[in-house]
Length: 247
Image (cartoon, rainbow, N blue to C red; front, top):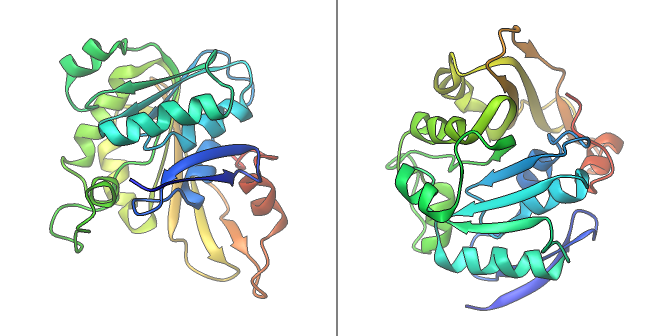
């Protein structure tokens, strides 16, 4: 495995990644920005890969503890290394576990309903709907091994009552996301993410509270780029870890 260390979150984070595998992108920074900065309990990054989302969240919420949950042994090794690279050994831990296996999660040390915040960027495609990469890490990141509802059910089992859940997904998967989240969360807020001015959203950030009965809110879109290709100021600040997502 060819490992390369590079800056992320405007240089506030150093990430070791496999040069030939799945690489961290904008989705990780956007999802991490859904973390409330005042979080003081446990944040879990589910399906963490090399740990980008969870470690970004650790920077944004300096009083929180962070758990990185990853099934791939190779990515778990990189997540552990990234904790060390960023000096977060006192606040972060990597767990090697299959999120969808209750017994495996508990054996790894994950406790049900212990997380104040759960962040997740699940695989965005069902088997057979896209061409699967021959690279195992890329395939694992992009193509789901189980229905989204199973992923959400496992996430909810780790989230404390009243805890905050946040997920990023394809915009055209909104109906599937809402169906999987039905009766599990309230106070849902949906933030569409558009690549540029006037363009349809390509991503959605969904945030909600376990056990809440508050209604759903559809927020104005977050626009990433202006027509000239420059980042919009708010998007630029979010991607540098300087501002939270506008929930």
